[in-house]
Length: 132
Image (tube, rainbow, N blue to C red; front, side, top):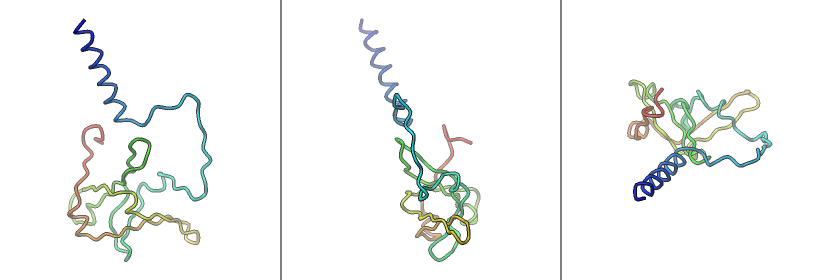
C-alpha cells in the first residue's frame, strides 16, 4: 500500500515537471485566429540583423523563446560583432524594436545597446534539449 501511494506521488510529480516544460494543454476544440496586418511572423525575425539606434550592427536574431505560450526572449548571435567565435545572448523582447518599412519592403530591428553591454551579457548556450 505504501509503495503504491509512493508510486502515485512520483508519477504525479513527473507529470508536473513535464507540464512545466511545455506550453499549456490544448483546449478540446480548435480555436482559430485572425492575424492582423500589424503582426510579426517569427519567420521574418529569424536571421534579421539587429542594429543600434545609431546604425551599428549588434547581432542577428537566432531564435524566439516561448514559455507558457508567451514570448519571453529573443536569442541573438553576437559572435561576429564581438570579434570572437559563435556567441549567443538572450534579450527581453521589449529590448528590440521591429518594424516594417513599406517603401523599402524590408524588416528592421533596433535595440538600445552597445558592444560593451553585449560583452557583459550572460551567454546563452544551445545545450541539453536545445542542442543543435
